[in-house]
Amino acid sequence: MKIIRTALEIHQYCSNLKKTGRKIGFVPTMGALHDGHLSLIDLSLLKCDVTILSIFVNPAQFNESLDFKNYPRQESEDLLKIGHRKVDAVFIPSVDEMYSKNEPMLEFDLEGLDLVLEGKWRPGHFKGVITVVDKLFRLISPDKAYFGQKDFQQLCIIKKMSAALHPNTEVIGCEIIREPNGLAMSSRNALLTDTEKLEALIISKTLFEIKDNWEKSSIQELLNNAKREFEKSNLQLEYLEIVDAETLNSIYTKSNSPSIACIAAKSGNVRLIDNIILY
Ligand code: AMP
Image 1 (cartoon, rainbow, N blue to C red):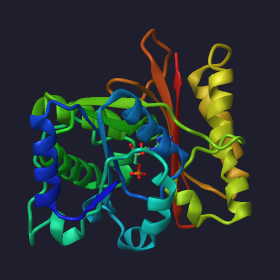
Image 2 (cartoon, rainbow, N blue to C red; image 1 turned 30 degrees about the vertical axis):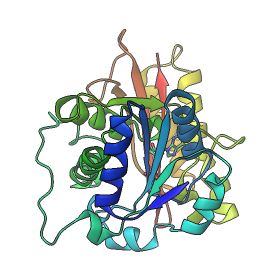
Image 3 (cartoon, rainbow, N blue to C red; image 1 turned 180 degrees about the vertical axis):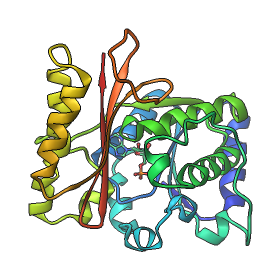
């Protein structure tokens, strides 16, 4: 497994691979790897000739400096975790390697997908996300890139950006990997105490309840019941919305198109998100 730290080297490495006709699978991450990340790596290993992982905590997508500072960073543990898998290269750039001073963010019209849900609560977040993903795609030119549905809005946004700017890269959405008790795996879970992890189960429990009662109850009833439960908990609910899975706009009556229930909630300073697809 090659460890590459410069943009020039990863670009050359990938250009050489491309010349041999091998299919490149790419898994971008911010590290603190868990089984959710490993599931994306395993899909790439299964479907592609070469698998490249990136580990980069992207400052441009953090709208709170404390969140950026506290984000878990554990490079040596990460490398151990993927050690026995056949990942070909891990790209671990520094911030200076990825961004020059005063570098502008990517300007790309996301047609409102960036203004709802996370976009309302984290201004500028998606600009930072598409900027770094565009940069990584330009360096690596992957044939397939793997993203989790855990960040459903991010997946929709990257699909849109990539279809326009990187038409030769197929963006693949992968299912959410959960702990046996239902908690969606997240690097941020490492920042929670054992008690907070148990308290955070209200997030997945709420989503499962909405899915289980989807046929029987109205959207308003489902949302009201869930919000009442959150009021009794130690988590601060930022949003709970049921949205159209394509436009990401809130829906108030059920339709035939797929919908998705999305939650963001805070346990202390740790912000957690999760979602579930409803049909
Ligand atoms: P992150 O390191 O949090 O930026 O995540 C890197 C990639 O892993 C993103 O595409 C995430 O959506 C994906 N991911 C994070 N958590 C999970 C999970 N529990 N299940 C599946 N994919 C995940």
